[in-house]
Image 1: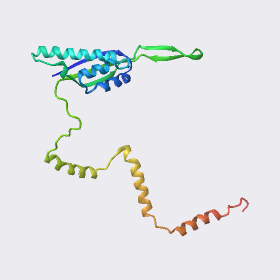
Image 2: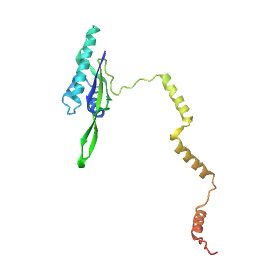
Image 3: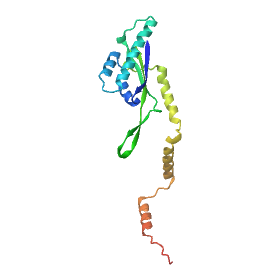
Length: 194
């Protein structure tokens, strides 16, 4: 059984609230509440209220469905933070030398999803079937034959063109190259009167 709760228009930026949400994602409800209670972040208070609301929603939906649910079995399946509005929430902050800085008052929306289903184990890999194992080499061979387009291919195309031009040019010996450079340096400049 799953239950959600959302808290809208919490004071503070979404980036700061995500720091707190990341600490409780995937945790047991009791552990998550303890983390929120003793966290020094300002966003933790609003998130704790949202968490308690989600627990109450889970109990209520269990009663309506005539199902017994133990709140200690709940865990945070998903939790995310969305950015709230800042329109018409701009303020001016005094600054040195008679200036003023514009300051935006940020708000955020928090959503928490609780579940009492069994948690997936960490590091558990999905077993692949024989048919999937046979398909992988065919897909790899197919993808190697394709050419990539767009901006990613442009630098490679230039390098490939330069490599082909060098390969097609006749190979000169090192002594011939030195002689050509020396002749270019020793050549006297033409005079204006001549």
